[in-house]
Every structure is written in structure tokens, then in C-alpha cells.
Image 1 (cartoon, rainbow, N blue to C red):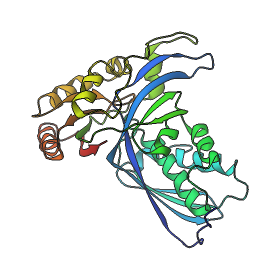
Image 2: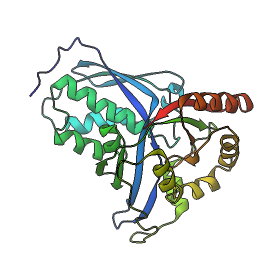
Image 3: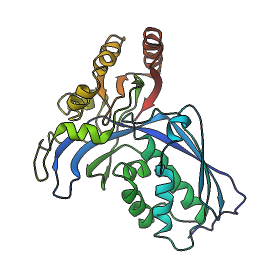
Length: 295
């Protein structure tokens, strides 16, 4: 097992945005959780988290999203750290500093990505190997999206988030757009109105092995995000975001990520994505717009 790092070391970790290229809601389980099937990719954009190992657990916030999170009773970074500490006797904790760059409650898995980054930092600080089962257990105990974010690479996420299958995806230029409207995941699932034990969607088409860009786009054309219709009821501005992205040159797919209210568009390269981002920003300066890479 790798040795733990000295307490004075300052460790850094990225927390990339999670983008649901597809999201099928297969049904609601008797325990209240929803069974999902989602192809997940990670963006070049995201938050940043650092850890100075020590005896006490604390969290400092900075960045544009810090004021929004300041009122949270229990940030997912702290929840993940406590979940791992409950499973690893004598775990060294420390002071986290979160640079919050992603919009909050945006369907980009920002909080889950932050929690996963915290687990990776604690693993490094304590000399835990990356495939230590206790890391996965702590991730799942923290939130359904955290295991995929802990894996941190393109994958198929199934069940309530506990089943992760690696996928090889082609790279796309991408634009992420959030109209600065927060949409709570619980409200979207409530609007979906599935009773426990109720089925909703089928598993859909089989995912093509090692797909080309064309094959992936063809597959995504028939594999939607089932949370988009209820999210649009809660946030009608999503229609404006969709129209703004569809109007950009070279947009190959426009869709909502997660439970919203962030929409994404895929492009053949980063140059086309950057030009699209400039166009959307110029027309809607109040929106959060980010050109990035997915895959």
C-alpha cells in the first residue's frame, strides 16, 4: 500500500463537470430510488479542490459559486469525507478549499464531482489505492452520481449510480450553457411523478462498441434525456437556451444534461465550439456559457 503523505503537503484535484449524454429513467424502485441508464462524459471545465491534511475536518469556499454554497448545512465534500472516515479507522482528514466555478443545481454533477475529488484527495493523503472498495462505498453513501464522478472517465452509469461500465467515446468540442436558473433534482423527479415500483422507459438500443462520432450521434438521436420534459416545465427558459444553441454553426446535438438547467451542444472540434460560445454569450450576456471538450 502507498505511504501516506506528510501533513504539511498541499494536495490539488480537479472536479470536472459530468455531462449526461443520455439519461433513461427505467423506473422507481420500492426503496424510492430511481433506476437509471445514462451515458456519462466528463468535461474539461470544472471546479478545483485542494486539501491540506490535518487532524480536523473543515471546508473553505472561494470562486464565483462560493456565496451560493455558503448557506449549505452540509457540503458534499464534508459528507464524503465523513463517509470515508466512518469506513477507514484513523483516517487523516484536513482543511479543504473548494474553488466553485460550476453553477449550482445545474445538472452538471458539480457537488458530486467535488465529493469525488475529496475522496481522491483523502486517498492520496492516506496512502489508499484508487480501487480501495471503501472509496466506492463512501462515494455511493454520499450520492448517486458520486461513484461515476469518482471513476472520472466516460462510462455507462446504471442502477441508482452504483453500476459503472467503462466506455470508449470519441471526443467532441462542446458548449455548456446555464441560464443561471437553479433546478433541484428532487423537484424534477417529483414532476416525473413515478410511484414506487412503477416502470417508465425500456433499456433502449444497445450501446455501440467503440463508436465513431457518427455512430454515437445516431445512437444518441434515439436515446434521450427522460428528465428534460419535466425540467422544461419547471424552467421554461430551457427552450430559449435550446434555440440559442441550435442557431450556432456546426451544432451536432443539443440536449439537457442531468436534471438541468444546463444544456449542451456537441461540435466536431474545439474551434467550432469556441465560436458558438462567443455567439451565445454575445446574445445572452447574463447566461453562464463555457466552451470545453467532452469525451
